[in-house]
Length: 167
Image 1 (cartoon, helix red, strand yellow):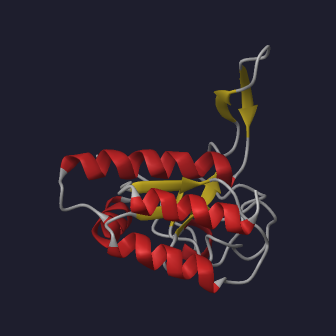
Image 2 (image 1 turned 180 degrees about the vertical axis):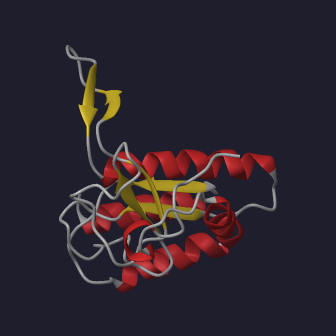
């Protein structure tokens, strides 16, 4: 979709008090004020926006590069950064290579790779954490995801706090 359409969706989710927004999309753009403002509005409303870092082996793209949006890197099955995963502003990492996923009919299932596959892992864990306590919203939920991550012996610019963990 267009940037305006994406921001409209973000604003709808914030207005409807969604606790977690998962964004498996992005572009190799610099930080955009509109995404940063939407991320701040989300955090202020008790919502956490989680976005894919990108698959260009380049610095993290928008909207994940905004300081108010949690960025997700992809890990391979050996818990190493996927060869394609962007780097730089990375908060957390999750499985993103060779992920078994649903696919349109008639195929039904397919193995897919990308930070767009890692992001729903983080969003799902965020939703599970949010259900454990009504105090885990927005910035508090962000902090819990980072503090509970399994550290990895790799640079934070590649894996952030480490491997996301469910409660």
